[in-house]
Amino acid sequence: MAPDRSASFRKPAYPLILPAWIALGIFFLAPLVLMLAVSFAERGTYGGIEPVGNLWAYLRSGAFLGNYIRSFGALYLWIGWRSLWMAALTTALAIAVSFPIAYYLAILAPARWKGLLLGLVVVPFWTSFLIRTYAWMFILRTEGLLNHVLMGTGLLHHPVELLYTQTAVLIGLVYGELPFMILPLYASLEKLDRSLLEAAADLGAGGAQSFWRVTLPLTLPGLAAGVVLVFVPSLGQFVVSDLLGGARSMLLGNLIQNQFAVARNKPFGSALAFELMAAVLVLLLAYAVYAKKRGGEALL
Image (cartoon, rainbow, N blue to C red; front, side, top):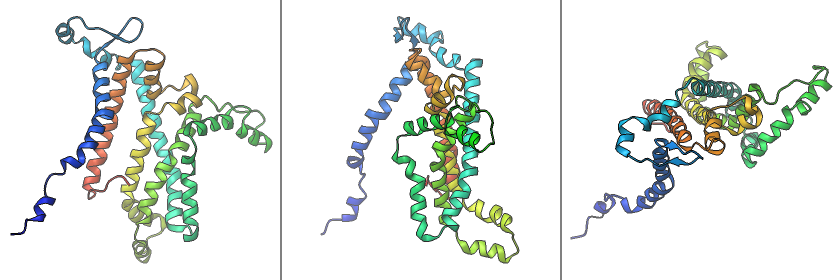
């Protein structure tokens, strides 16, 4: 009797996925567990971690939660709130700029130009993000390109202070995250059935009605993916706010980075990092629930 080959295909593929699990465990899970343990420790006198003499007494006293309790201080809550609304504003501006671009690329652009235009969208990825941020410093500084152009055209008589402001940070964040909003929107708009727009026009719908009742609802998966891809990095960003905002624009990412590099308070920095990660995971969970309701669509 011939062996049942279909049974072999139904066997668990544990040997195949084991290397991936080992790699994730070593390079992802183990560092997270280590950082979680550090977040419950106390800072040493000269940095590092203070050894715990009596572990049971330390746990019973609740001192192991000291870093998390400290993070709810007024100053840190204000920094967290500023990071939240900066990320939200960055996402909103990215949507406002990206939607017309994605709509033109997907619906209006001639077919022979689509490849070139999409290439221009991803060209910034060919250059280091740090270098691009430094370029914005040269553009926005008092004697920079933007002030020279505005003064040369007569729109300004004196240079405007743009660098090391919240506006500069916002410009840098929106510029850096634009491709992550344009590409998911383009992918959704590219799949849009044009006959639905024609049907809406035949039924008397104008351009605005067709957009709000047909185009926007059908592109919500791409819009949701773009929001996640822009909001999450913006929430933990520290390079842009450090270079373009200076000491005036500290966000959560800067606060965490300073705890490790300047204050040498690894336990408190670890606690802040875990709280930020928890906020990101909640956002990703909300997107997963939304995607499941939309038919299981994943990030585009």
